[in-house]
Length: 211
Image (cartoon, rainbow, N blue to C red; front, side, top):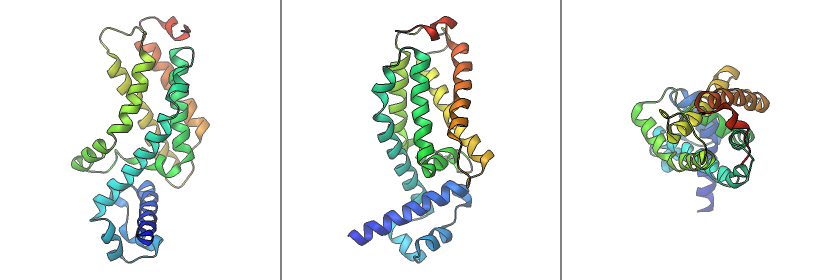
């Protein structure tokens, strides 16, 4: 059982690196097997097909991110104003992806080059992580007035989408094999956050109000 577990983990790690670097369509089972020094038949003892292997990679990525973010929610909510709360949280979000390049690359490439049915499965796998993010955002927006035509759930979704798109853009501009620049990512998100807040807050001064 121990040997099986080690082989499984080895395959999963190699597959995350492969899919993170090349995406799902260009990711190669042959390269994964070569990296693990196993026969293709051995891989299929653990994973039924390429799709199942990819979904297992995404499940591991989302679970690790969920655990990391759950630990910092309360700390970020203690910040004195809305902008500081949001910036602190997404700084940590980006830092987690930067510290774990494999997860960052997977996270940044998931919406490119996979079929709608597969994307739907990936979306389902990420439900718990999205819930952690949304719970934080809804708590951060508590007591803040926003434009009448935008509800807080929409605002939360837009912010999450911006963070994902930022990672995806950085991944493709830098190249999958190059490390991402954390300071660049955080500053890029600060700019997006500034635009976002000025666009949705009923009163621009609210972002500076401490509560």
